[in-house]
Every structure is written in C-alpha cells, then in structure tokens.
Image (cartoon, rainbow, N blue to C red):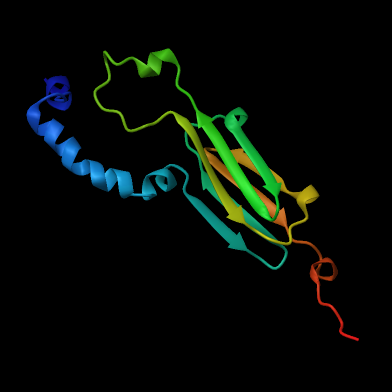
Length: 140
C-alpha cells in the first residue's frame, strides 16, 4: 500500500508539477552546494576546510592546490543492487561528479594535510611564514 502511494509518478498532476517547477530547478544554483557543504576557518597559522561528503569513498576524492586555490572533486557511484528501479520507492541520493574550489592564498603547499573520516573531509592548509608573505617593495 505505501509503495503504491509513494510510487505515484506518471499521473498528469506530477507531470504538471515537474513542468512548473522546472524554472526554479534550472536557476537554483544551490543544488550543487547542498551536496558538498563546507566550512572554511582561518587561524593565525592555517586554514581549515571541512566538507561534508557522505557516502563517498576516499578513493573517489581528488584534492589539488594550485594558484592559491584548493580544489576538491569527487565521484559517487552506486552498485547495481542500490540502483534497482523495481524496488525503489523514493530517490534523493545522486550519482555523478561534483567539485568545489576555495581561494586560500599564502599556503605552504608541501605541508597540506587531509583526513577523511565519517563522511567529513578535513583539509588543513598551513600558511607561509610572514617573511615569505611580505611582497612589499622599497622605492629608491
């Protein structure tokens, strides 16, 4: 009974709801962010980026720091058992590729540390020493 009630796709009203909701879905830029929510904190010595990546395997994540930008990318896949449409009542989890970038200047790239635990990626980016950051130029 609940399966019949939940699996009601295909009637005229659902088709109309999908059609009229399409512009909001098309222009709503928050859909991708909801899949990869992040907090970025700054201390005197480093930046700390925490990103929620539930259900992703560590091997599916790629990190890169280049040109003062931290890039995080991941790919989520499901095995055939979890994508069986016959028994699926409701789906909100998605498959595919997602990425985010954060501009974080003056980082000692060789000292970046990342840890992935319980669906949360934590990246610590140590700042360069003050003497290395100073780019002032004396005028003669």
